[in-house]
Length: 536
Image 1 (cartoon, rainbow, N blue to C red):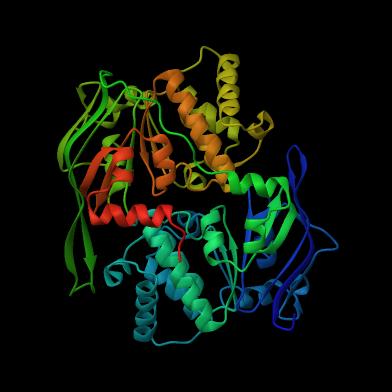
Image 2 (image 1 turned 60 degrees about the vertical axis):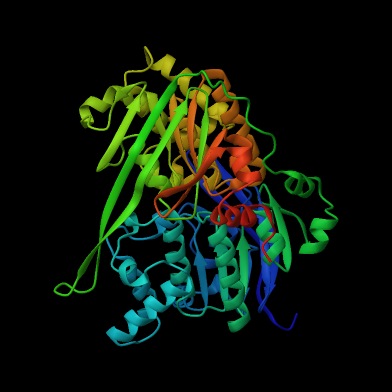
């Protein structure tokens, strides 16, 4: 191909671990042309992201690259580049959008300054022009109120808003090649459609090549020209996207295409007692924009009079666009966030004004699985220590042997091998880390679990396993779930009732089947259309 931009041959990557050497990628080869979108799909741990990091020269120190590995970009052999030469290339001619935005953004710097740093590293602009360029980029990726967001820190944004900042940083210097590692994972379905449309427009404008790493087959069908299917570090199938989807050759490809959240939740006992009850919760944040002397304060009602009741054995879904207040409401309900107004009851006991010490006895009974598992798992602990920590702190398990059995049971439940207990979080893929986060929650045998996008980082086949796992755990232990998600297909399969939020308010609520099959409001209709129809 005369317009070939990137060609990789025989890429092999292994990692040294305390238990030996693990092969992550085995002789992977593919190419991408200028202006082309190549999708790389496969289960978590298949080597998709490791291959991309090998291209960027951003592998971990314990990585071993195969001797026959060849990576050629625009006719130049990147394996021969020095670190200084790679730094000049990264963020300029090759950019990457990472899967987990919270761990990629610096928590102590404002997002505007972080985007500006990417630009100023490769281009010289005046201070005023630099700020204007940053605001233009934030506007381009549909970040609401970009002038105010410029001065915010990453923790003050929702997961989807942080991902849009990452996209702005990746596109800052008009790269020739964009490697997008799950770029829409943290985004709600409507914004996903907008971001994919944006990437297509920018790609056409700049004749930019895109490597799209994803587990969302709907996205693959709608935006990619060719597809590479990976499994266990190897390429098992490749070809034009239409050909692969219409006539898959490999059994694994067929399995991926047929994997989609299925089934409906079990019937709910309407007489079951209410486990968690929130009434008229209101949470207000104060945003500041402008300079030090001319700054203005703006109040943002993140949650405005929202109520929800969850019965024993019930799964209540909360859906809505990024920034709608879903996570803020959920975190406040379990007392990981403060409320200005409203009442919260757990088993008829009022808890909204309890102190941290007064809440401590309730913590094992109320657990949470966070959206970003990497930032919620201690990077300095091995998995065994992470799971055992909660047991020790809450005096669960009579002795070390009993705690070990509880940990092994939790690992079995999330389909992770016991050998993983001796490894650190960074040694796992995003999907594997999410399963470990679920194991950390269920090992304490809770009654109520807040699930904040628990399947967002998982490929479809593992997603189906996690849904089945959550169903089994709910049946076995009578668990109650508050399930926050932007994936309406998962919500339909798992949730008995659903609340739709927009701008901090409830716009629609009721049985999941009714809300998704016959939405009453235009906003819910737009969400449903974006979730269940292929993006044009």
